[in-house]
Length: 610
Image (cartoon, rainbow, N blue to C red; front, side, top):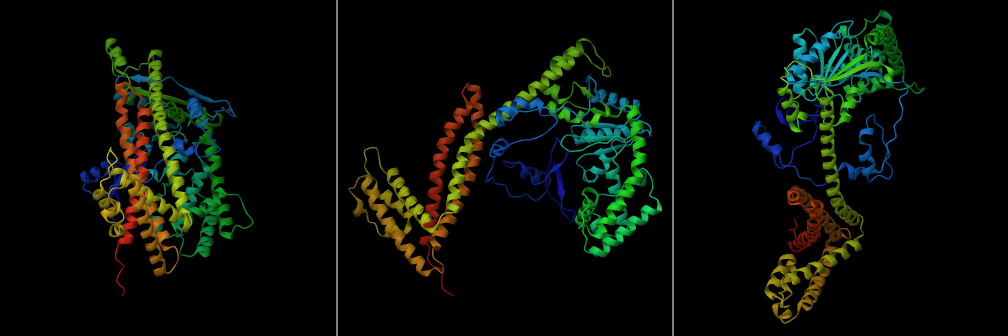
């Protein structure tokens, strides 16, 4: 996690960092008071504990749609699970050009330090950091590890671009990726998977041209200095393939004048970004204003300057073997490893990939690396000796498959649990929808039914096994739930009656008082149906609050039944049985809370007139 700051620079909260991508998860908070505990530890004002009012799993959400489809380069490894959960058949599409990338076997070392040293030597060997060397992409699994790699490369005299969650690096993502395929450029990324990036060998002239155009527009004062401060910093001149000539500079300045003339001084950083997107990424239109046409022509001129130089650089990179992808860890899913490898060898380009692993990595330590470590000690393998034995690769694949199966089992269990909750969710949401769009008459009929059911529950709860009704307790509960009714019923009216008789008598009394209250309020109300609107609102609020509490109770139940697995019991069946009982109690709770709140409002004295 990291401390977040507000506009004044004061710490305003805690941001959770995704260990997978290295990015801050906006709006995400830990549950069960953990977030507040960390805020207290960091000396930040403790925020209010968040309350879950609705939840759904990805599986249940996606299965709500009648048609599902998707496309990804790594779906084959999870084809069985996709078919099982979503009934989707995965169809492989052959590549347009043959894959020219060479995926070398993983190389393992005894310690993480030795693996990192081997990775550094490999970067130096292929010319990383040199003008005529191969571009290298190093994929790590944590921000800390990526920063350590960059520091180690700097000690070797190699400047590396760092792409992780740090604000100054995240803002430059497009800039870093645009040159990640240039000769000798070394890029260290905290997991490339999921970034949606396309690394072009030799560099991307389109992105570089856009960055240069934005730089010139900022220099010409298209937006204020305050607005420009929000944008990513402009890279140094040596970032670009060549300087601009006078004609192109004139075209850019002319476009800047046209923008200022059309937009004035009110242009924001977001407006500028939109203008650049229209000029660089959309096709020409007859409706395009003059400043867009000029900016598009100027951008194409910049791109025309950069493209020949980068094409020549691309040929140099291809002759050297293309992009070299190096991984520091195997991931828990082979799909992520495939996504990292796939950054190299795009569109038939040559490339190489290799993972530099150690027996101290989490995959080995947590999921059965003890046996391999003992084997290394038996054969007295030194720290810097690479292990490329087929047995090690097989053991690693076996560990990775075991991890994938474990997480697949967890996802299946979550789905089984959520299918039970999903049935309850459907009932509650349909009932809520019905109340939300009910007419005045339908709401009043529902309240009448709630009144009768509540009276029946009160009488039943105060009836013993022999059928004797505790009259005093009944009257006490009636006074609690229906305060105005307590004044019209006397113990002598219902003494000697059985359960059905007491329930019928009290129900009639409640119905009569309710009707009189409705008529009384309707006469005073400016609009008809005021009580129905109040009843609808109270019922919806009671339903939402009760459902929120139920979700937390279901979460606690799920955590509890997991331990029954060690007793050899079916945890899904146990969860289902308990969930059914809790759901019955939930519906009663919703009704009780609605009736109690509604009748409390009916019993409240009228507001004094001004």
